[in-house]
Amino acid sequence: MGRFRKPLYLKRVSKVRILPSPLTYMFNLLRKKKSPATPKELAKQVKVLEEKLEKVVEELEVLRKGHAMSITKVGIIRFNPFGEIGGDQSFALALLDSEDSGVVLTSHYGKDMQRVYAKPVKEGVSEYSLSEEEQEALKKAQKE
Image (cartoon, rainbow, N blue to C red):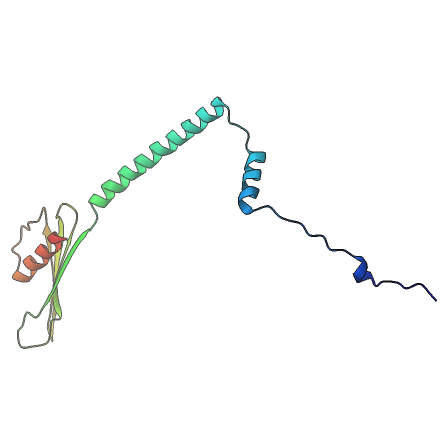
């Protein structure tokens, strides 16, 4: 009788490798890569962080100044100026900054015409006379 040969797939033994937990793996990586920092290196890192903080503070101040001048308060009122004709197609819109300065826009919409008015507002008061609707839009914006 001839010799019995085992098939190749039975001869190979698969290798099983037990991996460490992810937390253990991360700690091992950190230990290998990071050596204790010297006082000089720490001082350099602190100096770099202080410079970055100064830049951030400067940028924040620029943003604050820009925000104070931007439109932050809005009030809108829809109305019908002509009574029986049409619906509430007209509006008064107040656009104000943090100091209640800005503009009141009014649009009167009719069947045969469209009129738009703009009146400046400074510190909550306009040098032009405001209609009832414009005053209401201004008050609504100031409440926000």
